[in-house]
Image (cartoon, rainbow over all chains, first blue to last red; front, side, top):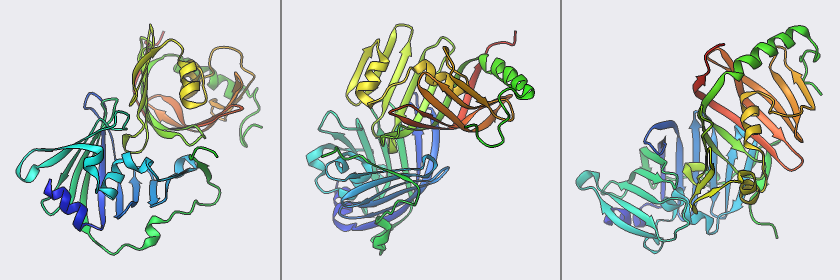
Length: 186
Length: 186
C-alpha cells in the first residue's frame, strides 16, 4: 500500500476530470455522469458534476454544501465526522485510513489496488476499491453500496499538486435557491 | 390558481384529450424510471423505481456517489426496507416512512401522481393544461403541480412535478422513463 502512502504524503492538491458509472445490483448500467474534481488537503474538495446535469458538492473544510440546480435546492451541514464516510473524503483525508478501514491489496502489477472495508457496520459503503498508479495518483474507485449497487469512478487528466485558487472551495448559494441546513437543530 | 394558458376546466377539447390520455395511461401495467427526488427537508437523491405488472416494485434512493442508499421493495406480502442498517420486513410502509423520513405518503398515490394520473379516491380539484394533461391536482391533502411533460413512445408522461402537503414539499424530476409494460389495447 505504498502507493497510497505516497498519495497521502506527497499529494497536497489534486484536480481531475471524472466519469462515474452507476450499476444496479445485477450489474446493469444505470447511467453515467461526469465532471471535475478538485481536492486540497486537509479536507477541502469540490466534486462538480457537469453532465448530464449539474450538481455540486463543495467542502471548505468546515461545511459541506450540496447544490442541485434542477431541484433549486442547496443543503449545508458541518463537515465534522460526516466527512468520515464519504468516498471523496477518503481521498481528501487519506491519512488515518487504517483506523477506519481494513485495508488489503488487490490485483497485481499495473492493475494493483486496495480494498477498504469499513470497520464500523453502519458505513454507507460495504466496501471501496481504490486503484492508484505507483506514483500515488488515484486512477479508479469502485464503491459498493448496501443495496448491491456499484458506483465506479474513473479519473483522467489528473494534475498532482497544482496551484488551486481557494475560491474553488468556497460556495455562495445563488439567489432564489432554498438553503436547507441539515445540522441537527440546537 | 390554474397556471396561465390553461383552458377553463370544462374546455371540451381538453376534456376529450384528457379522457384519451387517461385511457392510455390506464394501460400502463409496469414501468421503470430514473430521476431525482427531494423532500424539502434536505434529503434528496437519485431515484430508481421499477414497478412490475404483478404490482411488485422496488424504489431505490441513493445520495451522491451512492451514499445513504435506501430501498423499499414491495410484493404481495408486504414491503422489505433495505439500507446500510440491514433489511427488515414491514406491513406498514407508511409508518416506516414517517419514522425514517419524517413524512409519509401512500405509495399507491405516489405511483398514480408520478404517472400523471389522480390516485383512487376523492379528487378535490383537477385542472387540465391545453393538451388535456393534468396541470394541477388537489387530493388527499396534497396539491400536485406538473411543471413539464415528456413524450415516451405514444404517451405523455411527467418530467417534473411537485407535491405539497402541510408538512412536505416533494420535488420529483424524471430523467428517464424506460421499459413501459402496456396492457393490450382493449
